[in-house]
Image (cartoon, rainbow, N blue to C red; front, side, top):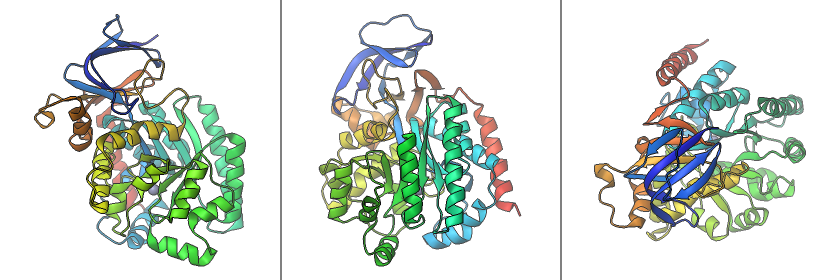
Length: 436
Ligand SMILES: [Zn+2]
């Protein structure tokens, strides 16, 4: 039995309700669960001194392609289609399973050090993403990326691949790894293919993760070809439900937002990647939140961000909408914190993990050392919420606990040798881009 005491936490952001902050109490964790929060300081195997620290639920990166870390900085500052067609796709064709493992391992190290305790992935060789996440000890919803481009033979093969992946995850027996299905987008998957994937998701009770309405060009072309918009189309073929995570969701009509609210669809908002592709448009996130749609935050892949720092994404999310809507009162610090924690965990649906710090829930917790110039002063409790959104960076995270186990201690990952991972990733990335 593993026990941990987070001793004398200066501030605990419980996130339930969003602005409830506890002061100068300790958290006792046993096995996977938070057992006690209060003044008592029971004996524990690991004692972590949390004086001067803010303690909060771990962050959820609701949309990424972890293995693309190998292509980080390889090609930037160019139009999306040129970036994809001339740079990314030719390299991805040469990617092998071991590349995906190493790229994912690198990303898992980067993410967990930055306080991300759970991520949602979409890529190929998804088995390797699972293995990397398992090795690092991070929670993951790994969705098997797939598309058929309207080719029936390809669709058939892809269906088999998806089914095989779902079986693989069952065999893993790691309660921190969940499987899902990741159809790339409505415009790269045929109607028939999406219907089949939906029925598999239904049967296997796994979530669906899909890109939706990322660029205006995509939206206009889709509407012209199908006679309806993407979300209307997905509703018509029966794909929508509370188990669907849609990434981006920029070019949507009011009617589409109503449909999404009706089905309880979850949204992964990726403001940094959206800004980087420079295609205009801002996802109508404040409107989604008003309609009760659960929105979480994502970094998108590390080749289109270019890092996996969700604290940075939180700040961008807060600022982008204030600028766009000329309203400094929207997307407040506590709203963004809810998106990064509770909403994210609700979307991934791990049993017992709620994105809150309270007794009886699973312990996915991060500790942020506030004894730094840029976190000074703290006027009142609400200042801590503000500092975490507007000041904190990933490398302010000092300790990370996932499922009741210490994964990062004093800023160092304890589950893998970081130096080895960096060396391996460097070597693999260079080999990949020069491979014939
Ligand atoms: Zn993406």
